[in-house]
Length: 289
Ligand SMILES: C[S@@+](CC[C@H](N)C(=O)[O-])C[C@H]1O[C@@H](n2cnc3c(N)ncnc32)[C@H](O)[C@@H]1O
Image (tube, rainbow, N blue to C red; front, side):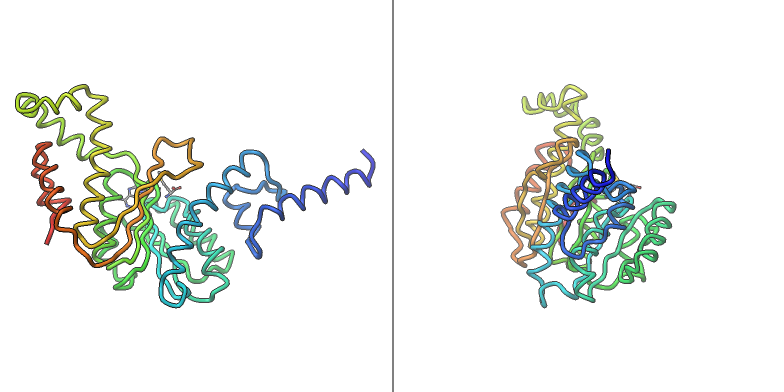
């Protein structure tokens, strides 16, 4: 290939990348997150990844904009942060240019917390903090402010999503954005009371087979979470995280605080727990004041 042709190809690739990026977006961050290759290029896979990230970001951006001052001073806690790519993208695309606000990443794996801290320092993302805590511990952590405006939990394992909801309630969050992961707690309870349930109701056929116990346990968990949020004064929307076809777990729950505690949701929550033999969860996960 001639030098001119090589230059043409490189300019075309550069233009292509620029076309996909938001104004001012950090190329270095995207490389660190392996969305751009080391050479700063996009491939088929990374283009899809970037689309997914933008898609989720757009939901969160709209919510942030609804906060006082357009969200410029908002606080956001991301639970089960992993490599914190969601927190980094939100910071880069929303908070960085605004000069205010703070993103907290909560993660139990110390290595990932160290890595995120190092990356934030390298990128000069000063208003990002990473806490090596469980979600449950973080509700009482001195490093976090009394109020958090937005709570996110993307595929936070098992009951970490429930802990994130409890955290959001304790911190009087205006919004919670949850994409639940695997869920074992309710399935375990269903398993324990299965024989009794089968003798009592034909509905128990729905979870007689072990695979169905797991599936219905997972489905039921999210239904209970939604009712619990509604009973606590949140308006809830459940939708699909389009573009996450690679994951079986793509249910997106968006909760918006309205202050109107729905008595009917509280009643339904209790009825469902009783119907499924899950009364024990009334005093633990789904305790209503
Ligand atoms: C499936 S990963 C998701 C990571 C990230 N949110 C994402 O979507 O890429 C779940 C992360 O949650 C962390 N985690 C699991 N249980 C947790 C808990 N109780 N408290 C805090 N972090 C937790 C795990 O260490 C893991 O990094």
